[in-house]
Length: 211
Image 1 (cartoon, rainbow, N blue to C red):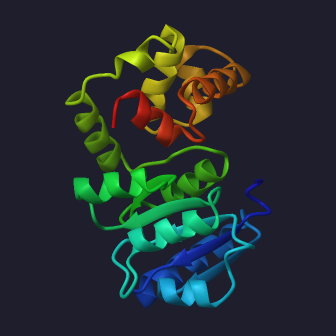
Image 2: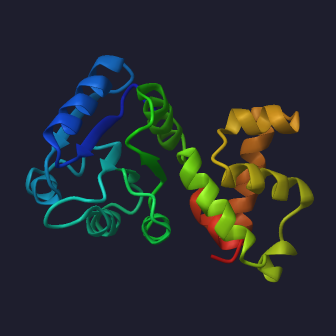
Image 3: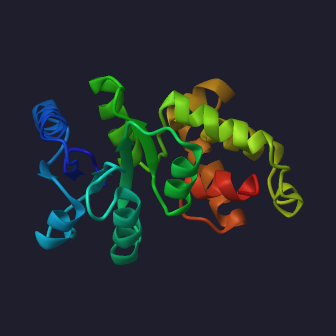
């Protein structure tokens, strides 16, 4: 979905954070519209599910928390793009969100430009993560042996692409680092998805590394 046409739905219980982010996204001129809700219950009660191109969920929501909201969203809209937006960095929260289908995990202290980049990346099929989150994911990966049945499927170049994907790099950044074209990067990622039977790069990295 092109970012200029995407409608963003934000679910955040703190009014000052919710309104500040809603205003920032609205004034950026990058998206088709922004809706904001104070709870998951409000989200599901307002019929906003079908028009949203991307959901931004706080994990620490009152009532139905962000992880529960994520699971329900993915059940209703399996292909929905969802970014977790939170102050929490606990490993169990990170992996629970990723395993439940989150497309990215962004900390609230990130700069406005970083948040906008993360949203754009997620809309374009990426899996953005704050650097602290990416570091935790990488440390966990290093503690887990690579799944041998997946190693045999993936070429050396595809392994390089997966390594950069796991660090949260954008497709263009991967192309620049590997000195290949953007189209070649997309072809590699398409082949990786087919070989690992996954639908997004978060699933690809987690599956390849045995998570």
